[in-house]
Image (cartoon, rainbow, N blue to C red; front, side, top):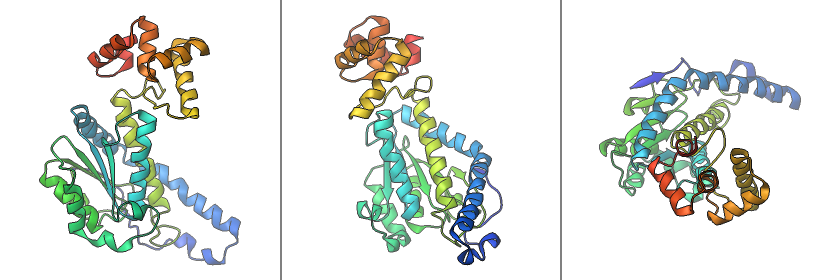
Length: 298
């Protein structure tokens, strides 16, 4: 198991905020901002572990595997946010990146604090997805002790799925259960134990990094352009046109025409234009190159 961590505990009291209740608004905000500056550095320390997680997940997803985020409370909601955004941003199927939130959809909007203590419920919930050795799981828990998350990871291990954890406390129970432990340590929160603050911010940063890096490696990005964007609203259609124009240096009129003829498949539209081929041929060329546009047009 790979671990990259620094000593620290999420439940300690922060000496810099002992008198926060006596501060005026600006003083509170400057203090919170100063604490937030520690987040990026803490995430930087664990990049080797993040990189290993990305490689493990990408290898499995190339073969048809899925990625599961499992969490409760703030940690679980952050998993939902990241999973949902993968669909419009990268054009990936909704069942390829799945978020499992303790308490279900209702818990996204209304706190369901008790459910996080149920180990068996976590195991039972992930069983529904029939995990196998091509799948990957990321257990997200600030403390690393959440029973619901541990239950899900325990079941994932039994099914030979890759297991990763994203926690903010050292030597946690969850760390001991996984293949890769990502443990950014941020020191005590401004409000003791309120892990929706620095811990939540670090989790959001790490999840952004993981999903973005995976999608780049899967060919969902050309240069720094979201070539597999799903242009299903006005803003995204405009973005798709700009992406086509940036790659091909063609006019707006040509971009509109080719996107229409490709059924709004940006990647196929680019291949059609550059290679002078039909949509059917463009799709075949992309399939032969594992969907990586650069291998077709460069």
